[in-house]
Amino acid sequence: MMLLLVAGSFMLACNKKPFDYRNKYLGEWAFEVERRSYSMDTSSPGYWDTFFYTGRIDYADAGNALRVHYTPEDTVTVQVEEDGKVTSLTYLGYGEFSDEKNFQM
Image 1: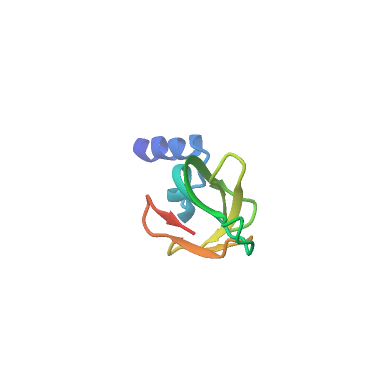
Image 2 (image 1 turned 90 degrees about the vertical axis):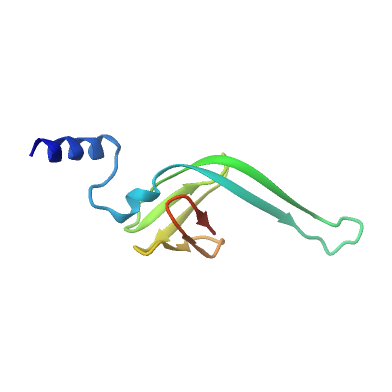
């Protein structure tokens, strides 16, 4: 009984919702962000660059949604299914949590 009480207190102290399948995705994440720019103008070829950020994933307001802060300025809200499949609520499309360390969108 005491062990359950301690475990329950720990989960509440971490601001996680007990028995929520999204809990395993919450917290700090390392993000690799590719930015691409294309131009139809031949004098300006565009660019393709990769940036690395430490960001955060937390609960969003909607039922099965999470808020992904993948750069200091950029946040996207996504729907996450129990199998880890992700559907973006904005322009990014879809993706998945392939395991508890990798998220691709």
